[in-house]
Image (cartoon, rainbow, N blue to C red; front, side, top):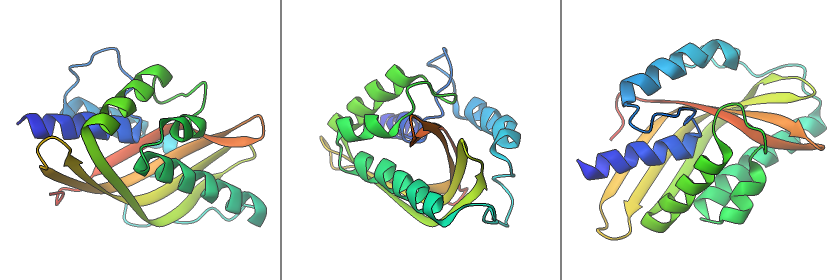
Length: 179
């Protein structure tokens, strides 16, 4: 049971959905909060069709996707300094310090590999971009070698801060077939 509790905590960190003062928030509350937030994301995360935004200049598309890749790579590398550099200093979807502290705890206790697929920019404006990906998360607890896995859909919302794309919120919905 502890392993699944840690997986839930790690998923909170991995997806930066922890925008609550109540640390005892359960999975049902998280799902409800995520579902309520879907209208902010610009499309329904639970839908089957993902359409790429058509108004993205190629140079901006390359920079946004590179920012997303760095966000994933820095977390997978357990490099807290790199990871922090990918985050907005004024995020809308999580508490900055809470996310950093949770990331440090996850890095100390787990080896984590997040693998995105079907990465697509689904919404774009000059100051905000939303990146969709099917995400597989594999975790191994360092102390016990216990393995946990999850998969789902993720939308990572970026904002432009001082000319650089930074993560401001993340929405994740796990698949029912997650292991």
